[in-house]
Length: 141
Image (cartoon, rainbow, N blue to C red; front, side, top):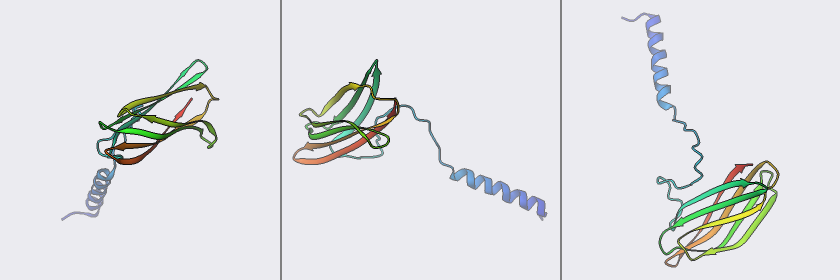
């Protein structure tokens, strides 16, 4: 009924179709550094952590915006800025807040150009239940 050429062509088209169905979509980075993803519930008390950085002349301005459920408080926070090779550039400890949502803003003298990671570790407590929130953001200046 089918000749060899038609059978091979059909097999090739079927293979391409099946392979095409296995390809996952890839999206470009939209620049949003928010880690708020409704499909991932990373923490119980914290709904969103957003990192931002800006260079203003010789200053590097670092911001971390934390949003939590009503009644959440924060303690024992540490914010670290490290160079891509692991060298500690700056560290802030003792970060705390009695507000469910708050912003950490730090300004330092702009370091040399390169890739840096800003890491946050903080304890979030609500209704007597505590959890450690630990996340980071990598950027280039």
